[in-house]
Length: 138
Image (cartoon, rainbow, N blue to C red; front, side, top):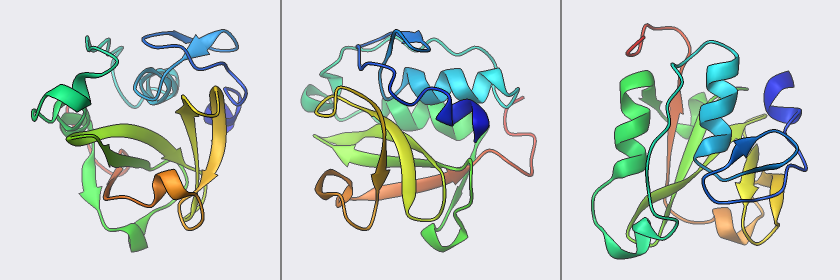
């Protein structure tokens, strides 16, 4: 959690992943999970609007080799949440506690905390994953 929270306030910028300078909702968790040794250095290639024009679940394809899907009732600190925006699951955040996440948000312009029980943009279909307790693709 210390690594994820150290990104708080980093400006939103598509495809970027430099702490304090810029990141997006895909690069932020990839950078955090890599920094703590949970995944290799993943650098997915995508259009900032891919989820509006395609049905392919690219974000899920990047997540599932390194994580196991869990129910919301199983969420713990450091787990991963991904929401459906547009046509696919395309917005990710790192769980701080069962209802609070930290994520890079276009509208907020930065990496911010959000509440899955209160924030309107997080009131959409979601899936949850853990990267802990297994050797998921490593």
